[in-house]
Each structure stands twice: as C-alpha cells, then as structure tokens.
Image (cartoon, rainbow, N blue to C red):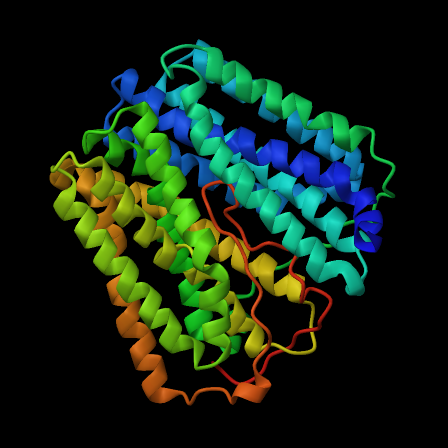
Amino acid sequence: MLFRSKLAPFSSLLIANFIILVCFGLQGILIPLRGGIENFSATLLGIIGGAYYAGYFWGAIHCPKVVQRSGHIRSFAVFASLASITPLVHAIFPNEYVWIALRVLSGYCFAGLILVIESWLNEQVDNENRGRLFGTYLMVTLLSLILAQLSINLASPATMTLFILTSILASLALLPVSLTSTTQPPLVKRAKLDLKVLWSISPVGLVGCFVVGITNGPLWTLGPVYALDAGLDFQGVSFFMAIIIIGGAVVQWPIGRLSDLTDRRWIIIFLCTGASIAGFILVMISGMNSFISLLGVAFVFGAFSLTLYSVCVALINDNAQGGDFVVISSGLLLVYGIGAFLGPMIVSVSMLYLGTDAVFLFTATVQGVFTLFVLFRISVEPAMPAKERSNFAVMSVSQTVAKPLELDPRAETKVKRKSPE
C-alpha cells in the first residue's frame, strides 16, 4: 500500500507511456501490412522501415535540445501532435516517398516522447522505489507491446480505421501528461556518443547492442512480411509477432539470474546460438503452412533474441563505475539506432535474391558471427570475478522500445572507465 501511494504521482506518466507504445507498436505492424496491400515491394518496405530508425536516430540527438528549450510538457505536446498527424497522412497518401518521409518523422517523434517520459520518471523517483517503479514500468511496456500486435485484428489494414485509431491514441496520450500534477524535472542533459569509452568498458557489450539493433530492425520491420509469405493471414501475423515478444518476456528473469552466476559472455553465446538455430529453423519451415510450428519456433526465437540486450547491458554495467549510467545508456541508444537503421536496408536488398526468408537468414547469420567474436574475446580477456558483478536488471528491446531504457534501477550509480570486459 505504501508503494502504491508513492506510485500514484507517476500514474499519469505510466498511462501516457502505455498509450504511446500501443500507438507506435500498432503502426509498426500496420505499415508493412498496408504496404503489401498497396503492392510495395519487400525491398521498398525495408527502406520504409529503415527510415523509421533513421528518424529515431535523429530524434535521439536532437530531441534533448527541444526539451531543454521548451520543457517536458510542451515538448511532449509537440511530439504527440506530430505523431498524431503522421498515420492519417499515411492513409491519405499511400505513396512510397511520402511514407519514407513520414516514417522518419514518426521515429523522431517517438524518440522525443520516450525521452520526455523516461527522463521525467528517472528524475522524480527516489532510489528506494526506483527498482519497483522500473518493474511496474516494464510490465506496462510488455503489456502495451503485446496489445499493439493484437490490435491489428480490430479492422482491416486496407481501410483507414487503424490509421485513425493510431492518430487518436497519439492525441489521447496528451491528456495524462498535460493534466499531471507531477513536478516537471530540470532541463535534460544531452548525452554524447563516445564509442572509444564504450569500447573500453566492454567490447562485447558494445558490439552486442549493435547486433541487437541490426537484427531487431529487420525483425520488426519485415517480420510481418515474412509471416504473410509463410501463409498466415493478418490475424496470424499479429499472433506471430506477439508470441515473439511473449517469448522474450517469459525468460528474461531466469536468463538474467543465470547470467549473475557465471561469466555473462557465455550466456551471450548461449543466447546467440539459440537465436541463430531458431532463425534457421524459421527459414526451413516458412513454406510448410503450419501455424502451430511457426508460433512455436517464434516463441523460442523471441526467448533467445529478445533477452540478449539485457545481458549485454548488464555486462557493460559490470565494468562501469563512478559515472552516470544514463550517459552510458544514451550512447548505447545511438549504437542500437545505427544497427536498427542498417538492418532493414541490408535485408530489403537481400530479399531481391532470397525472398522473405532473408529476414531470419540474416538474423541467424549475424548472431552466428557475433558468437565467434564473443568466443575470441573470452580467449583474450579473463572473466570478471562474481563478487564484482552488478545485479542483473531486465530491459526491454522491441519494435517500439528501440533504445536502452533510461529508467534503469541502477541509473543512480556512477560510471567511469574500467578494464575491458
């Protein structure tokens, strides 16, 4: 009861976060499905998907300036208003060039909206309740991601209904933030990307975050196209994408706790190997038209691939002391964004030769190569003693939360460079 009373001031921000994630998650699955109806090629859909992450990368760099200048509430209103416009324009002008520009704008807006919410929460919560608030935040996030995938069943993607719904959601998110009684935090500080510092902290962790970006980008952008080509209908596609998220959510804590007991790099190898095998299996069964088989392997794929990010960040945190963890996570945001931008571009070109199987063939190959890199790092760097490791904290990476969450329960700790790995 005590924690509920302390959570109450943040309820408006959590509600806004829930609405925003449903909004952008629904757009993420709606755009490729509607693009297929408009006879956009898989290559073009990959470019459109990459444009979203290009906008996200832009927003990660520029949006802090907007918040510094205008404050949290007014900045949120600007980002939400623009986000409300883009889905309507998608439906009115189903043109590839218009859609590319709109996806860039959508990515920019989402980066800004999440920046406002997470920095606001992170500034206001005290250390005593930070972990529990983060757990609540994570549950809200996972629920919204699953609901977003299933919302595609509310209407046909061929109509304007779902585009109108996403516009309404973006506008609706304005209400809890505009009416909140929670005090606005001070101006947001901009985090600088310093790859040398991140590399010195943990080469495996840094490259791992890039790998997650370059493999998740095609998954969320072109995964629905793969599922359609595999014989699923629109409803089946929504279940396929949702089960991937559920798989990742179910095993987050067990994998995290296991990584606390041993060298996290071996857990990363385990996850990459599992994701690679599951990816190759999805390629092999894509023509079988077996709904149950696709869902089963998708669950396994999500269990391995969507837990990789949390372990990589935990590995980085193990080797980081004395500075601000938020600064580190902001750098990883940009690294992830670069990968998420490049991934759909590469896969869309590969589809010209390999078809939609290229989505998981690419993912499986990248995971396999990363496994070899981790094995090399293990051979040249000793494992960190167990007593020096930080506690694992679950983090979510998905189509809509394509960034390192700043609301990390360790965010109050300070970080500085330590020995590699």
